[in-house]
Image 1 (tube, rainbow, N blue to C red):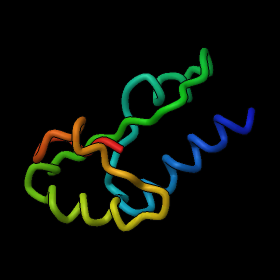
Image 2: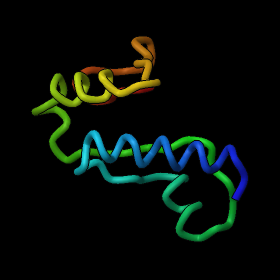
Image 3: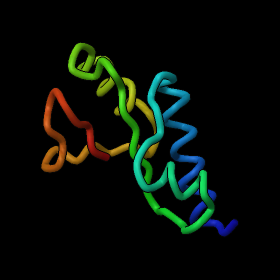
Length: 81
């Protein structure tokens, strides 16, 4: 495993430590499970993000190194970093 993938995994783990019920999904989840390719991002879902958008946004924005993409985020449905 190369250093770039290690950083991606560390970032995903950091997010899940801040929002423990976030579930890794999408291409990154499939790539990690199958080992068929390297993915350089990570996507997570929350069943109740609409209900607690502000609390989750505050939690991730308090994480060192996080920068919210205001242009890409769509409250209360997505928080893009």
